[in-house]
Length: 469
Image (cartoon, rainbow, N blue to C red):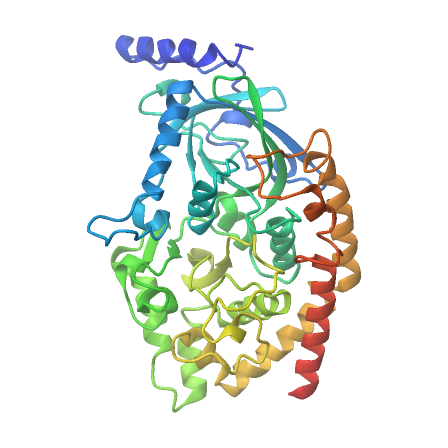
């Protein structure tokens, strides 16, 4: 295997020779079709096997790393024309971070010229402002194939993209992975994830960046794996003009709010179809439901809503209408399906972040109003209201079963502890933890946001709500 430090230079020379000679350049050292090839089946069992904690080494050339860090300065500057003292409203306003080519190594196998950039919105802005260097990031394995033809159609065990969550606001470092597992147990599609120790060499030798959750990108292989058919239009709605702007809330169509991440849908036909059906006349309730269900998986949405509210996942559609995808499934006659995303603040009780404050944790959802029409209009329908109550019962009996979930939490906590605290654990500035005690008490400690008391409290709340109905 070519050493990681010299490999980029060697491969760049190969790429240039290949282009000049008019032929395909040699593949990088260690390339196999199973690990790097475009047509490889996604190796879920390799990357997301239960119990695995990966070690991922990343090599960034010093100049590229310096450029990445310098680019973060745009999140410290006020927007153009803002009054003195005005802070940037987050990376969405300042634009995405820059991409740079890096080398990635997993279990002795390397991938070269992989695109890497930082990611996040409030999490990225907060870390930059506070001097925390454990930043979430994305990897895009053929991002730089035009510059380096030797990696054309490069894949990572069948995947083109990976995201790495940094456990922002999560002292347990487990919420992203656990919440997604709860959703899948409840029949809600959610991205697969695995723990990964990330070490980065940017010219000073390997530096431990901390324990991350490596998560598949929904625009990659997830739709085919979990819904059975890929190739449909996948949107990631985002309220680009304020939390209650029409598009991401599904109050009205705002094109800028619907970012197409995969597939093709000329004219946003699938989005318009859902909006038209949702806001159609409801005098004939049965006809209204039939029209909606022809274009939207309403049962699946209500299942998501029930599991979401049982666990309490405040940073979602009910508070800020984001952190979800919608997919026009070609295997289901193009109907839209709801996909949760970005779950680091699931199973976390917070107040003061929604209007009204109780909406994020409410179970009866009486507080939901016209600003969240997917909730209000469906729950105003007697049939759908009963479906939602049935899904709440199913969630506490299955996906959110206390015995299973608490055992799972304890097992995962013990598994990742050596990579979070102790001699091989995280160290400032590559951590959000103020002390080892924050992690050690994150399951059932007397303070902070411990997971086990939260689970027990939510189960009591659901049972009380169901009894009161």
